[in-house]
Image (tube, rainbow, N blue to C red; front, side, top):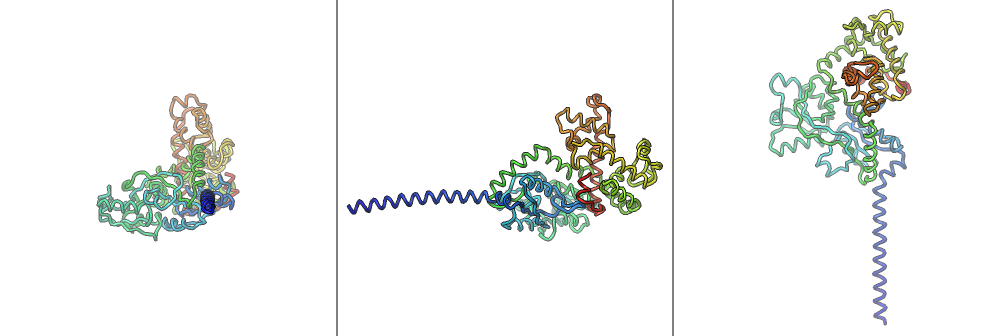
Length: 476
């Protein structure tokens, strides 16, 4: 009997132990699940999205009207989607950004990071939001002495510096392992943009940057040039905190919607669409004329900006595009002055002397203000200004025609990225013959707006933009 009691006790103990283990396992799984969910839940509960942002033109910087940058704007849009505030910790180099990402309070690290195989071993990447290509950028002066490289073999003997712990340093090490003789230094002291500046001043021969970073910086540095592409196209993504599965899933869903809504195209258009169009010679002349010509008319642009609540940099950029800040400018069609006004436009706005700098600036600004007000109310945000600039160039009627055509072919008539696709069609007979205002050089209008934004960005970067309040900027 005692023997059976012992066996029964052992059986009960075994059942208890199994049950305890099973329950513990379930609780452990639940705990793991809770832990995985905690990143997204903590963000929403705390009402703050903590991010590390690399301080650079392609990522995040403080502009005349507050924070700017492609990745900043993208993260701000995601924070708005979550219904939380964006809290930014800045980093000056990629290495510093990576170090800051290890802080347990950081949810996302954004530093234009390429999703390389080596990095995937160490980091939890979110969905890809951008595609770029690594490029070798060198000083133009090397062209004259025959040292300008055209392939990897030509890098032998050149002074090359790249950022430490970047995709560029990985590329260099990979090439070395394949037998290429490259004398490259890895540095954590300088940012990618600072290395570009060193190439510009000939302190170093070359560096490696992503194609989008080069595109943004070529406007600011006149002595740099693209040598060759050194990698295939790579995906850029944010680094997420560990155990962020639900956060990553939510990002995938949001990015898909953001793309489908056209907002991603709008954002890329704002930062990247016009950078490739800029002429190097014109860049040099523009920088010179900022010093020699702009100061003569500076006060008039500022006064007109305040009166009509249009940013100073937009007015100055518009004027440069029209006349190169030459008050006596005259085109073959008869438009004249700093803002190149037609005689009917001048009469409409009470301008008696089109070559008088003050009258021209105020007349042109008043006309642009009228265009802004005349753009349909459905066109919102910065698109409104772009529509108005296009109207300043080719006339409001052609802009309305382009909107009508956009709607006919299934595009968003109130979206500037979509209108850019349509405007060039206004010079094609099969389209313009059906439109009220007929033929127009729509392609020129697109280049016109892009060029003005390019000039505007240079003026803003060089602190030629007096600060307007947020309310004043929102009214444009």
